[in-house]
Length: 211
Image (cartoon, rainbow, N blue to C red; front, side, top):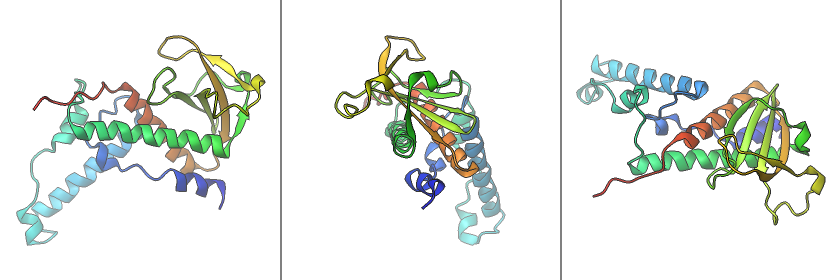
């Protein structure tokens, strides 16, 4: 299997319906996918209401606005109150960590001086949920991951470096990986997961409603 196939197999498409009400105000690729999902759902609702999908569909047609779409377009930040919000954020973290594993598995280790300055799509250094940073520059993906003294014990010391988190805080010891992106399809899959991770890092902590 070629590199594109390995990437797409390890990183399945995002189930965008799960993120119906997510506020992608700073993630253009995810916002585009979400809008396409909303438009398709509205079109299906319209066909059902007109009877184009059978009598049963017409009787059950949704003719009002969908709450998720309203929340997604709202300017006020969404409160993270419901279990489904917790699932959304955890799913985003899992996909992002899977992407990091792919970069480290299919890419090459590099030194800190080789990592470019720009193209940051997420930075979770200093956090427990996503202790890494991901950048895309010129069809190359760069992963900066927090050094693990057990997992990374075999890595040469001259490949380690200290990095200050983008959001501030103490510098942390890191290892660095890079991987060329083989195709446009693989690029979009990586970009979508990276943007989803950026969204997840912006979300308030899950605070369930009191029963």
